[in-house]
Image (cartoon, helix red, strand yellow):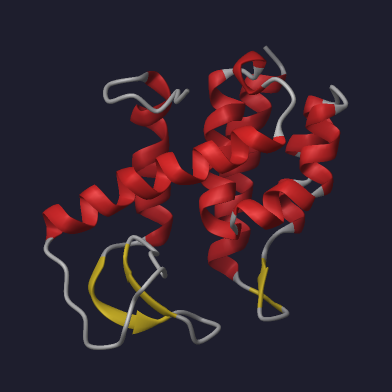
Amino acid sequence: MSRLKKGSAIAAVLIPLVAGFEGLRQYAYLDPVGIPTICFGETLGVRMGMFKTLEECQGMLVESLQKHEQGMRRCLDDPDLLPDEMYGAFVSFTYNVGVGAFCKSTLTRKANAGDLVGACNQLPRWNRAGGFVLPGLTRRRAEERDLCLKGALQ
């Protein structure tokens, strides 16, 4: 099941959040840790020299968000009980760090134990890439945390 249906409240918040932090780059580039990346942070199958149209990038973003959502859902005991804001923050986080990191995280353990505020408060800890604190990740995690807490404190 997906809660990211076109026109849903979660999609309306999540897509601009992720797109805004990832940024759009239609030509492949190396991310801060040297991984070939394109569009809105896509890395799968990317080779330097690649180009994607805006429409291709938008399609890739939606498809990838849904793929990461499904991976995230497999690691949560009751994903459909999470408030929309928290759910969206978790999808954004999973899109950025990957399903494996999400599933192994203290954030996920806390969410599954019912400690929703504690889960949200784990987000700022994930502001490093290649061992270095990145200001963009710090801002992203703060926004994800705020969104997450908005849902957790309802």
